[in-house]
Every structure is written in structure tokens, then in C-alpha cells.
Image (cartoon, rainbow, N blue to C red; front, side, top):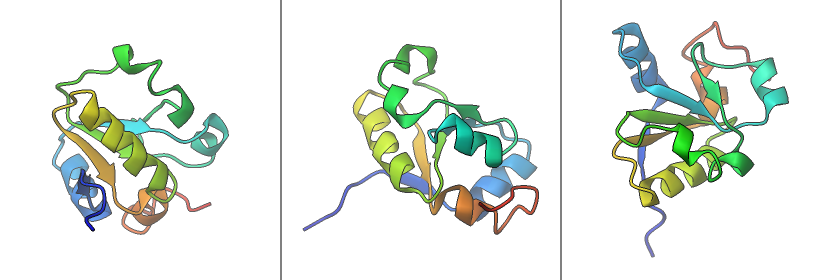
Length: 109
């Protein structure tokens, strides 16, 4: 049995993109209190439970990297964005926790 299929980026791949000056939409689907603790610079917080109501605010053609704490909520949202026609939605593998291992400016919590 095959698991869910969606596109993803490793923390190192995302860091490389940002260092090269690429500007994907960083869609953080954690709760605002979590966003206040730690985030990737330039991220936009849209809590997972608001994502469907706020789809019209998002650009379906933009490269979008979905971020949460450990990668579970973001995987779910990435699959939903795929179903709603987003052309380039990616889950950040391991979430912000894993990303903090490659970018020391992002604290772990």
C-alpha cells in the first residue's frame, strides 16, 4: 500500500533556495503562538484550521513551501493545496524543528 503522494523539500534544499535569493511563499500553518516562538524569516502564518477559508488569499501559481513544527500538519496542508490546484506546493520535511538544524537563526522549541 502506497502512502500519500506530495512534493517535499529537505531543510537543506530550502536553505539553499533562500541563500540563492529565491523567494518561495513560506506558508506557516502552525498556530500564532508557535509562530511567535520561532519562524523562518519572511514566513506568513495561516493556521491549518483556517487554510480552506483563506485559500483565496494565496497564489495557486506561486512556489509554496508549507511549514509546521515537525512536518505532519504541513504534509496534510500540502496535499490539500495539491487538490485545490496549486502548481508547486512543497512540504518542508521534518518541519521547522528539522530546519533549525541547518539554520541557526531559527530557534528550536
